[in-house]
Amino acid sequence: MRSFLYKFSIFTISIALVHFTLETLYTLKFGQTFAGYLPDLIAVALLITGGYLTIKDSNTVGVLCGAWGFALCLHYRSWAWRFDDVIDGTATEIVEITMYVLGFTMPISIISFIITLVLCLPKKEEH
Image 1 (cartoon, helix red, strand yellow):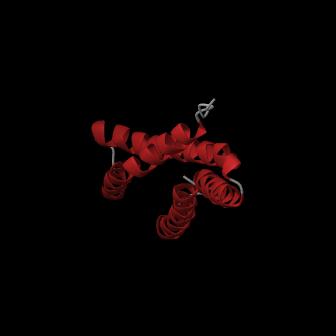
Image 2: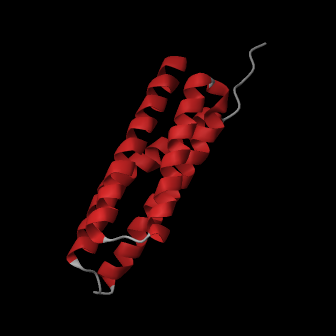
């Protein structure tokens, strides 16, 4: 189990760095405001912190779970407002493309949150 948690923590940190890179590029290219960029920075900080703490002590998996929960909510909300724009016909091409990218990558957030949630469940004591 520790081996899986270690690998999952490294995966989490890697995803956080990819998220940071892509969100920064998006912000620079399309002029996203700091107010729009800040939640992504928080998600990245939480994922890196959760991954690092869990590598150091597997009992901190709850921090990792919280980080993935935040990232999942942010991911969904980022997708949802774009979906709403597409449905009502007000989406620009970049909004629509971003919606598809977010929809394609959302399973990462969903599955990762579920994994960490399961890892947080109380362990059965053996007698």
